Amino acid sequence: MIPLEKPLRLAVEADAHALADLVNFAGEGLPLHVWTGLAQDGEDAWAVGRARQAEKAREGQVVVVDFGNGAVAGLTGYGIGSEPEVIGDDFPALFRPLQELENKALDSWYVNVLACYPETRGQGLGSKLLEVADEIARDAGYNTMSVIVADENVGARRLYERKGYSELDKAPCVKDGWATETKNWVLLVKSLS
Image 1 (tube, rainbow, N blue to C red):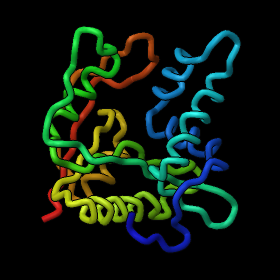
Image 2 (image 1 turned 60 degrees about the vertical axis):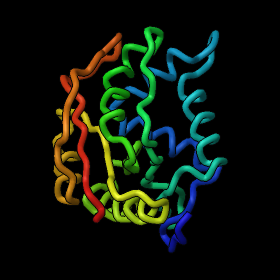
Image 3 (image 1 turned 90 degrees about the horizontal axis):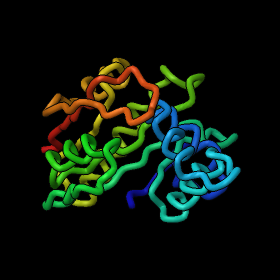
Image 4 (image 1 turned 120 degrees about the vertical axis):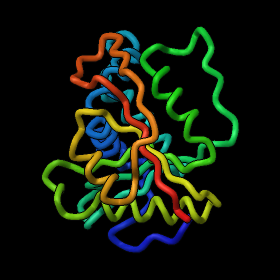
């Protein structure tokens, strides 16, 4: 992992509440929809999300912006290998188009989650975290960045395009009970060389 300077730091378990919020912001409600499906009898869907995010924090997978009062923005990403993931008949329909797009971004560092609390938007936090993502990717030996955005998320797409990303492909969104205006998922890529 690259060195991080304040206000950047790796997330810790205590950030799980904020991370669940941020993941749900980035996913435009899809994470909460998934957590609701994963919740056992009477279990709170947000508790499921917080537990999943606490695990990611324990694994050192999340970079956050913290000005001293807790995480207000976060970045989660990972490297996509050189072989496509197999999409079998039992692959969840909701995630099939997302995986199909990821499979077109082989050998890239994938920005899985980039979000900030609404009250901190417009302060350059997303741009700063994308610069960190570029550094992490270079440090890990990747020459390409990738991200998937919802077609109606104009603000996110504009940010990525300002940072050098361009559309490579898109796939129709499968809603599978998720209430969304999203019609298509859009794969954006950027070269680091």
